[in-house]
Image (tube, rainbow, N blue to C red; front, side, top):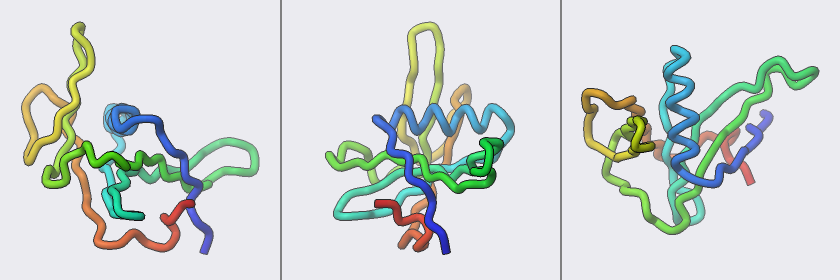
Length: 116
């Protein structure tokens, strides 16, 4: 079985914006969370489309929380953007006026998701 192509993002906020943009386009989107090398990895599975012979290539956009700054006990990420800027929060539920992105915890990621 082939593995996904890993695309490491610079920040968790980048991952949240990517998820929110997919949701805005009508795609059901969630963030996967799993442990790797003693820290949590947050990611979104996607398929790379319409690029020559790479059509259908699976991608995992991910952020590694190596500093342990993100809370482990929250089930959702909330995003609101307004004239004051971007507001990203973790929550145990949804909130009106925010894009709500669920976090799905994996006991163990499948082999195809293990990027280097």
